[in-house]
Length: 194
Image (cartoon, rainbow, N blue to C red; front, side, top):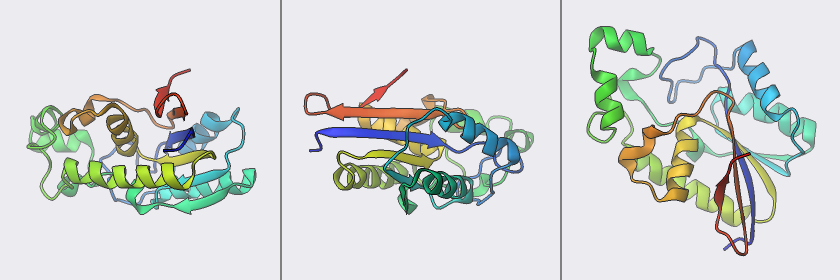
């Protein structure tokens, strides 16, 4: 096991088109989204390595940041957002007009109440777990930034806390939120709130 873990996770900022269930929909960042992400990392020391979701709302900012800091860059497809199936590209208001209770069903039972064609939450968690464990092995001792999605950040928290899949959506993560994970020889990787 790695004796020095220093991994930060950064959620993308606002995409073009505002708040929607995007999943694999590949919208770029809006101007406001770029500003949100720049503000989130403004006072940070450089990272050695930047890992990014392959989706544009993460990838483009990660490329710019890695180049500016002289960090290596890696795209990790397993860190893409959970797939929302029939909800992709749609707003909560649009979904509620069709079915006033669909969001409640999903958030209270993400395993049984998921949208048609959506990626199963358990599959998503396993995909992120495999990528997370590989990152811990391959980047031990380095300062790493992962630029990804709210779902990926929720999954990492669930993995660290051994939380069940049905509780995944009980964590709210704002746009351009920064989450720190630290660990050492005495302590396993843990959330660090500052």
